Image (cartoon, rainbow, N blue to C red):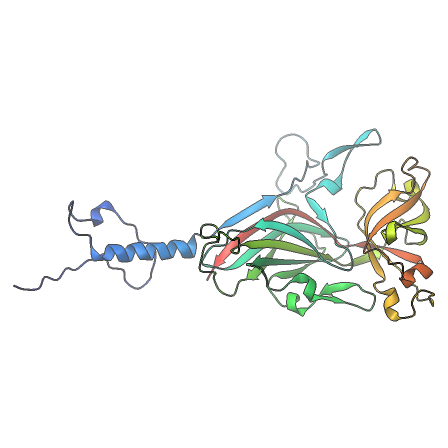
Length: 356
């Protein structure tokens, strides 16, 4: 009795690519399955794991454009912002276009992009930010916290302050593909008033499990994504370039100064993207060390009238961060300069996994 040799033409050769499995590939009913079927099933599974990676995007409301009637023509990028009622009249608010942000001078701010169901074969995550920038450069840095570890590096541990306390990202961040310095050049002509900025988070090696389907009941297999924004200083404010603190309030979180609110900032200035710098170096009665002035920079979180009942006649107040300590030498020489700062308007964020 001779040995029968079964030759299966479906055995995969060379490239391990997805192979369709058809009814005609199977023998008669109740007959044995071809030996190559299991190989093809495994090959197809590997192909799906390598190529069916996840992606997601989010868009921020931009409001109308100045073009009226019908569909805006190609190249129309004149977004004017949503319409608001201010002081009894309707006006378009450019601050309402997309998501407009600036950071304080002493730290970056992080936008949480949510929990990400990391795929088992993903080797990196690409974050593409559609944005515009104004006044000065803005640094973007994307990072992931995978099972409790920040990748590439924790942003707060890679900030480098100068002698006045103004921070920049250090080489541990700027040397990665997850960081880009975005300039103020206009977007290329097109149908959208935004330029794409691509950031790549290198995961070094794939996790081996799908966080979306093989998550640990204890919650350890979690990947969270963040986008960091760090502004840089612009020129002095043209409306008011310098002033003097009249009083420190709320534990140094608010400073008042003798400049009329309405005449300087308008009835409703909205978010005020400004930094202030205490440039003095006078001898102080509080502390005598150099650190008594550190940091000299503060971010303005809000401008408000000193008297909320009389915004048109009262003076101004800044809510600032970080607060000015009671021991700070700034309190002995409270002249300050007001700077504009780099702002970013985000239209959309796209997240995409990349395989090996």
